[in-house]
Image 1 (tube, rainbow, N blue to C red):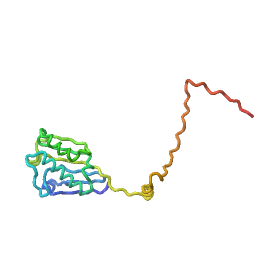
Image 2 (cartoon, rainbow, N blue to C red; image 1 turned 120 degrees about the vertical axis):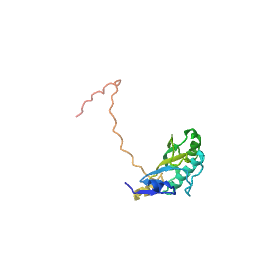
Image 3 (cartoon, rainbow, N blue to C red; image 1 turned 90 degrees about the horizontal axis):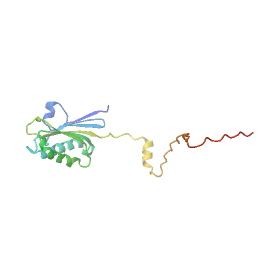
Image 4 (tube, rainbow, N blue to C red; image 1 turned 90 degrees about the vertical axis):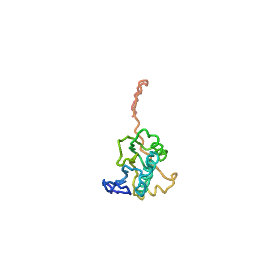
Length: 177
């Protein structure tokens, strides 16, 4: 497997629990449950689901930028909320970040998060293919205009010999000497 890259942030919980904000393993990136802490480690939007959801997503976006990914690369999110009746607030923030790309997602109500003022935590799974080495043949083909490229034709498939019930058998021919 490719090298594993780990990214940490200013969350006070990362060193305590021993986790990374983001882990990249090959073409896949996994973003840990992200809450509404700002870059100084202070919780943003106490009591406000929408504000906290936006901060969570902003934090995810910042972590992704550190490895060359964007929110468009996100293929799945999981939202953990302490009050599912506030679904619309969390969903609105999520929709603002993902209206065009629409990753698979879940929203699950949980009894509590690690700190009582936290209302939401969001995880993200990301797909971002690593740069591939292009062979000289492929790079030459890529540099050639499409009209000038020749695509080899596939060999013709053998013709099936089908007999229709409606057709009469072919007449026998005499051999000539």
